[in-house]
Amino acid sequence: MVLILGRRMTREDSVINDSPAVKRKDVLDFCSGSSHSEEILQVFNEFRDSRLFTDVVISVQGREFPCHRAVLSACSSYFRAMFCNDHRESREMLVEINGILAEAMDSFLTYVYTGRAKITTENVQFLFETSSLFQIYTLRDACAKFLEDQLDPCNCLGIQRFADAHSLKQLASRCRSYAMANFSDVAQHEEFLDLCKEELEEYTANDELCIGKEEVVFEAVMRWVYHGVEQRKPMLKALLHHVRLPLLHPNYFVQTVEGDQLIQNAPECYQLLHEARRYHVLGNEMMSPRTRPRRSTGFSEVIVVVGGCERVGGFNLPYTECYEPVTGEWRSLAKLPEFTKSEYAVCALRNDILVSGGRINSRDVWMYNSQLNLWIRVASLNKGPLETQDGRPTGQGICCWWLRWAEPPEQCGVL
Image (cartoon, rainbow, N blue to C red; front, top):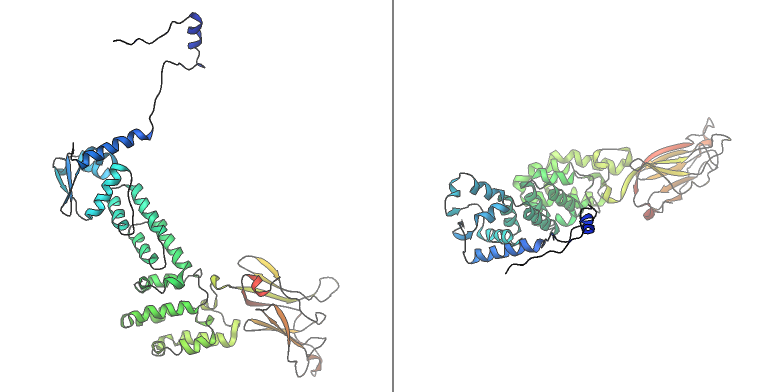
C-alpha cells in the first residue's frame, strides 16, 4: 500500500506559501530531546552487563570490565587517544590499567554509561583521581565540590593538602579560609600535628587568623612542638616569633609562658620574652610586629585626639575623638570633663589616657578608661602646675595617642 499525502492547491495557496512569513505545514522538525541519548546509553549499559557487542576488556587490579571502545572514546579523550591512534592498546582485546582501584573504575564506568555516579566519603578521593586520569572533568569537579561540602575542623587540613597536590586552587583556597576561620577547633585535631613548620607559620603569622585571644595561638604552637619535641625544639624560636606574646594576659604570660620548661631551656627565646615584659610595663610606648592585634580579637589600633580649641575665639573644646586608619573613620568618645581647663598634660598608660594639671582645677587628674568609654576622676596631684616656682602651667591643648580599641564599638560604649 502506498500512502499519498497532499492536497489540491489553488493559485491563492501558491502565493501564500511563497511568502516567507508563512510556515509550511507539510514539514515537521521533530526532536525527542535528551531522552533519546539517555535511552541509548541505557541500552549500551545493558549491552555492557551482558557482554554484548563489547570489543575491549579493561583490567584493573585483576578485575575485568568489558566495555565498548566507541563509548569510552566518546566520553574520554584519554581513551580516544588510546584507541584511535596506532597504539598497542588499539589492537588488543585486553587492556590493563595500573594506578587506580577496581572499585573506582567500577564507579567511573557507571558514570560513563549512565551519566550518574555515587560519590561517598569512602570513594571520593579515588574517584577523583580516576576521573582526573581519564580526563572526565565534570566528574572530577563534582568530586571537588563534594570535598568542599565535607569541610570540618578534623579534615580541612588533609583536604587542603590533597587539593594542593592536584592543583585545585579553588578548593585549596576554600580549605585555608575554613582553617583560618576555625583555627581554635582545627588546632585540636590530629591533622594539625602533621603540619610542616612552613604550613604552621603560614597560619600563625597571618593577621586574619580568627581567634578569641592570642593564648590560643601560643597553645597551638606548643602542642605542635611537644608532639615531636626532639625534632621540633630547634624550631621553637621561629614559631614563637609569630605569636603575639606581648598581647597575652600578664598573669598567663608569667605562669604559663615563662613557667614552661621547654621555653626556660631555650635561651634563644629570651629576647622575645623580654619584649613581652617590656610591653606589659611600657604599654603602647613599645611597638613591634607582635604588639599589633589580630583583627579577629576585636581590637584595632586607633589615634585618639583629646581637647583642642576653636580657630576663632579660642574656646576650649571638650571633645575626645578617635581615628581608625584602617577604615578612615572618625568616632566620638566620651567628652572630656571640666572642658574649660586648658594647657593640661596628657599621657597614655597602657591602654588608658591620663589628663592632669592645667589652668583651672590644676590638681585634678582624670583617666579615660578605653574599655568603658568613660572618664574617671583619680587621685589628685600633690601640687598643681601653677604652684611651681615660675608659675607657668605645663601640657598641651591638643594631644594625640595611639590606643588599642575594641570592636565592635558598641561593646565599649562608643557613640
